[in-house]
Image 1: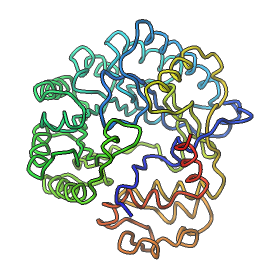
Image 2: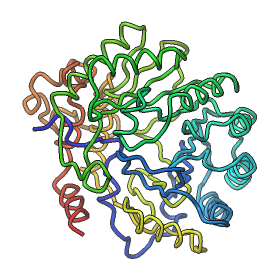
Image 3: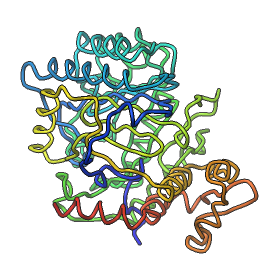
Length: 422
């Protein structure tokens, strides 16, 4: 079993979604459900990195961004009408790169989101993703004025040669200028994304990138292993670097722990401080997603639009989205039965250091998780249990990308494999 079977950031993955027939009305989907999180997706980037498998396209012909924002507003009004009592406790703008939009377009994005969804983004934690090329002072001024409390920037490497190897043609000077601009723009928490396992990367160069990132004292750092995926540029190389990536993971983890960071998950490290948690709980609350690459979920249905990675298919989906008027129904999705809800709760919990609360699981499902899933026998040395919780051990946390996929249901596996075969 490879320790890098797959990055599990949500269960089930969107490749397990299928067209819904009949398409349920959003008013039915959200009846009695709580949408604690709001996610807005902007599917544009200035370039496509070699490791990227996100739903995004490079560039935008004249008029497309305006048309996309028009469609986003139509969708937002339809979603808002379907929600009983929207009480968002957290929000995020992701992509793609939201700051691909210029300052005027960003202002419109904030305006339409707040007005259509009935939310004041200054009153709740708001995370916005950016990039070295688009973290400009005028855009950052909009984020600061509109209440962004966290800015996440994908640097990946502070070594120019490694950035080129990852098909991310950026210069160190551009990265430094962007980080300086973020710090100068206000008090938002800073997250820096770094990648390990890049072709040509060494323990010394990885240490260099870690120390370079620490220069800006980021409140958070995410350390991602490089994945080799068949639908991305780097996938054509067909190589895997399990041993190297595990060595670099442990090196990065230990370095950040020594620097005073605490580990939240395999990827996330943060400085100790006032608890940034909100009233949102991914185990019990839903998420309303806006944009053609966003997913929404309730306790029983996850849904979105069509999913793709290849450029031609992504562009076709975006073109279809901007022409849509029928935003009052769920189009593509996955219905969760009782067993899948238990499995999702399990997987999402075991990917974090605190693990799974046995009391919370029992209160939701009326059973004990160890009766439902014989976990300790299946993952010896990777999980530990006591009366209150099931938690990953340090070695188990390092193998999160093996534990998560190993717990997928046969149904989800079959759907994902069927998608890959299409």
